[in-house]
Image: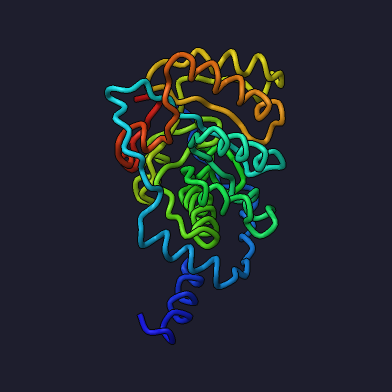
Length: 263
């Protein structure tokens, strides 16, 4: 690429942006549009390189043979996410983070979500404001997914391929919209109930009940959950588990619209 063309390319990149339920209702209030952040040229260059190289880079684990488990963290990024990322980096563990768009927008220009991507973790869409998606109109459902998709892609260059419906609430309409958006629905089969029981030892013990192929539900917005992670990793590693992202668990990007709870 000629030198004069690089700024133009960077500017172009910067502009890109289970259960049965009653009949869906129109939302009471519209979703607020996300903020627009100015990203420096160095960050944009890294984003461009990430897109060209493909993201995330799979470590090619064969989870048909290995005892794999996927740690997933919802509702962030929050005040404890940076500490969690430090722990995971020291242990060389990758996880999947299902982020909420409003939390990304409130996070100092997206510093934490960029670090999640830079550290090799997988990013997933957890809606813009965490409503039950089954209670929304089709238009509002689309906005919830699209606003979060746009802000994450703007800040990181990452096009997310997985999502988690808030509260695990999904139906045929949610499945259809996620299929149109190119997002697989990732649920779980191990619930640590860390949002209810804010005791690190209890959270770690529940995570230790995982089986090969499990997807473990956690929330990085709770300090007690982050405090539980070292003991959780120790206990599962002692049992011979390999920690992978959701896409690594399946060996490929899961199919859009389809619902997954474990391998």
